[in-house]
Length: 199
Image 1: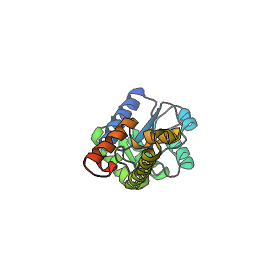
Image 2 (image 1 turned 90 degrees about the vertical axis):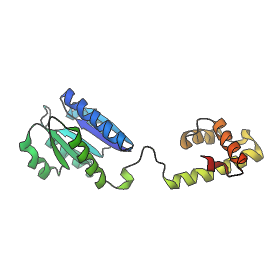
Image 3 (image 1 turned 120 degrees about the vertical axis):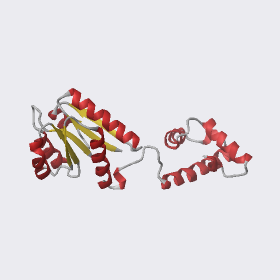
Image 4 (image 1 turned 180 degrees about the vertical axis):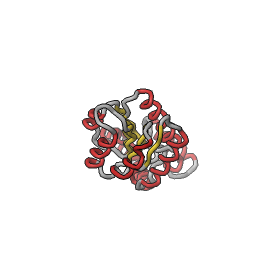
C-alpha cells in the first residue's frame, strides 16, 4: 500500500489536494493511505513511513524545502511533489531536494493527475499494489490451503478446524462466512469440478 502524506498550512488547499489525490488513486485502483497535516512538526513527529510527499513551500513553522530535506534524510526513496504559489522556488526545490515535480496553485486536477501517473511509473512494482487485484502466487497458495482444509473438514469434521485457521480464512480469502465456502463446494460438486474453480 502506498503511503502518501500531504502538508499544507492552508486548510482549503490541503483539502483540495487530498480530495484530488483520493480521486486519482481510486480511479487507478491502487491501494493507498493518505495522511494530511497542517503542521510541519506534526508531520515529522508522526510519519513512520512515506512513499509520496505532497508539500506546500511557504509554511510558518518550517518551509517546505527544509521539510523536504528532513524527509529525504529519513526516507531517501520518498518522492516529493511541491505545490505552491511561488514559481521562483521551482529550480530550488528540484536542485536542492531532488523534487519529482513542482505545481503551481491553484492546483489543477489534470496537472496533478499527470504528475502522479508519471511518478507511479517510476516506483517499483512492489510499491504499487492494486486495490482489487490479488497476486497470482497468493491466489494459488490460498487454493491449495483451502483445498487441504476442505479435505480435513470432509474427513474429520468442522470441529477439528482450529479457530485461528477459521479466522485467517475469513480475513485472507474474502469469504464472509463458512456458508459461502459450503456454497462454493456445492456448486463445484454440481458441475463435477474442483470447488475453487467457482471462485
